[in-house]
Image (tube, rainbow, N blue to C red; front, side):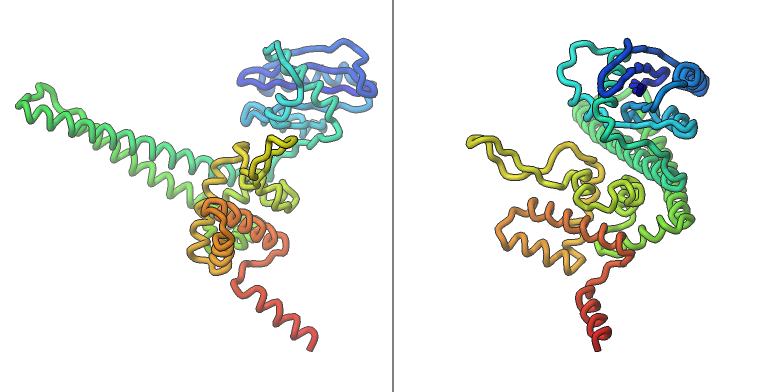
Length: 361
């Protein structure tokens, strides 16, 4: 008998449903439990497992990827020696069919059933390398600082423009304010906060640089990726972080392109439904935006990429389609370089021909 544990995570607790199965058939009534999402709850759950799962062929734990809420228990189960499978919530949602009931207990049951029926597709959880995890957290924190800085700066800019307009109106009608203008203080305070943001961004960048320098394999791939003109520091870090230093997709550039949202997919059915290939909205939009900027820069500064883009335009492709083809080309080049541990060279074909002639001479 096999046991499949469906886990539905939330901030303070996690719900568990156990499915007892033999040959894809449930042989006992399902059992549901609920524990606190902290170390005390993890230990209680572990004790229940040891007490009730002695004569079992295999155990499989499955849950949805919910960021920080699912990471703690996943790490605990990994170090406890269990098989943990974190699946994309979208994948589970669209595999369970019509769903009328919606609560945490029911969701954990759906997840357990998903694990039972799709166990051949399981991808077991493994904690990230500490250096990669640190780089990922620093990179996300850097993005948070930049976004908050932009929000505060833009909000203050809009308020200042509105305030200037109000001043002009009052000046026109010769209206005098009886209170001190609060925008003098606000602008001063925002200026200080923005300076502090800049200071913390510099410190964050230093920590990111140290993280790259202290890990040889990350540093090597970083130098390879940034060797291509147009692909700079931020794009290289993002690519390394989200591909787990290129190990996540087994050096398959097509899978990475799909994850980035630049792989085109067509739609056709019968004789009436037929459309040209389009990129999907299911993608990491942050990475897609970064790669777009890299492609625009590469078209300007990298001769080989410039020639590739121009050839697509010459074929009659629209600029945005040609740019998307360029993004795919850049990704394919990067993955090939990392796989072969080779830096980019504008004279690659010439150098290869020269080496071949030297070997055959």
